[in-house]
Image 1 (spheres, rainbow, N blue to C red):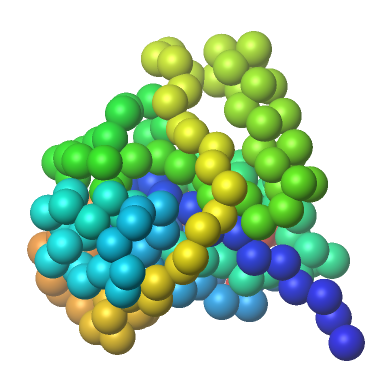
Image 2: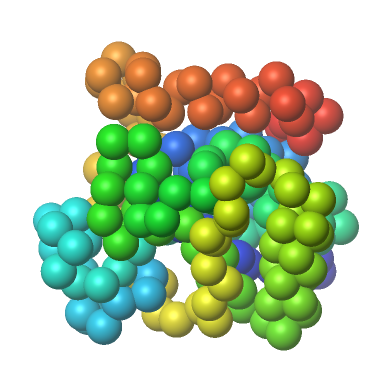
Amino acid sequence: MPVHEITTLGGGCFWCLEAVFRETKGVISAVSGYMGGPTPNPTYREVCSGSSGHVEVVQVTFDPAEISFREILEIFFVIHDPTTLNRQGNDAGTQYRSVIFTHSPEQANTAHAILAEMTAAGAFADPIVTAREEASRFWIGEEYHQDYLNRNPYQSYCMFVVAPKLEKFRKTFTTRRK
């Protein structure tokens, strides 16, 4: 029986990350939800208001025989801006912060290493502000958030924000696409 791994990533609106990771080879599932705050069973409204303390995240289940955690992070750093504190484009607030929630000491080490490597290499013009935190309770997002782009391809946010990030993934990671 294959062994799968889980990681949870926050990088702005969860619809963007979910759309990309749903198309990534080796990813079993990408589920939108919330992590990192003290409020039990937070709602979208609570998370969007910033009152719950949670981050919009995507929990990614992947097959490490097909895609490594490092490769997941390489994609993550291309499809969002890791240099803007608590902001992705027009989405502002701690609920949109850039964060890697790790699920094992090995993931923590890999995340720390890639953050250090990118910083040392000057991969971005501005300093990387992506946090690395230990995973906490994952709260699955409401059903209407799941597979949002495919369900709402003509919604304006999807057309002007989600779709361009997905297209960037498709062009940059041609061999990583399902």
